[in-house]
Length: 342
Image 1 (cartoon, rainbow, N blue to C red):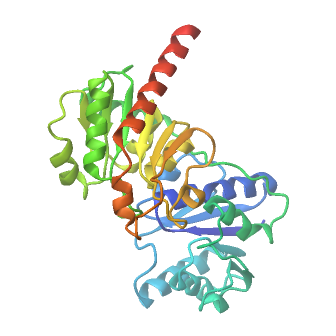
Image 2: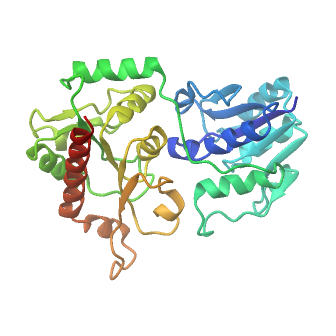
Image 3: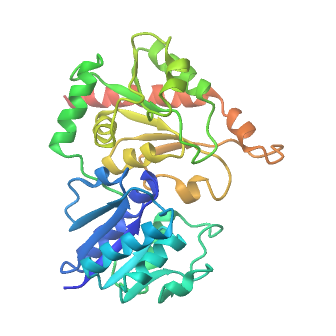
């Protein structure tokens, strides 16, 4: 049995866009033992993923110093891997694979440290015009043939559903009450729609009779509270109160998710919740590279004309009205469809 290590230690969306490759590998090569090396923050997302035989988590996604590199190399050497795929290209991680003496080390060929890898793939990610999911597949297809390309899909475990429902109930969302989830900030992963616009959107949706649940990290909670705090009982603020498994369950239960180019929009796509995305037009940040795959989404981008390179100014020009109108129309159509089927 070959033992394969897949390495994706960066953010939530990056990890989700790598998981289909692991599923495809397990389907094509069922005897392959697959371990995924992830960041400690994102590893809880992987509960219930049966195609992964093991998950290893590290605290620092890139490793900060040689001591951390050596420690990881020692751990990997003990696990006796036959092959490794470096999806998150960082010199420290490549060095750890080299020091761990993993026989086959797969990664891209155009970096100064690529000599640490011995299966080098000519893959230029930044300006490729390809989606991240396709790039991830291309990295392994030279070594593993007959892979069926899949879209992201992650499991929401029964415990995660129970915990999500409990938190919603404690926050005033009734058991069968529908809601729209808004995740307004992105940790700076991409130029964002101004947070005030998200608050205006929440106000419009609440005014139209829809419940709104707002989420965000603990670092974002004070900013979100300052902007969303006075929007009334139909807007529930959970920013800073959820861990990643709870967030996954809350997104699964939502009627619709609104977010920028950040992890929750990819969680939505992977758990089957319709997503509305507010995206920048830059080629390396646009939906062409980082949009949620599949058709269960609607993406809004600013038109590019006289921005003069100011992407944040462009994002601010995305109007509230078309976003709100689309969401309200979508929710109304869903309600009518549900009523007619009952």
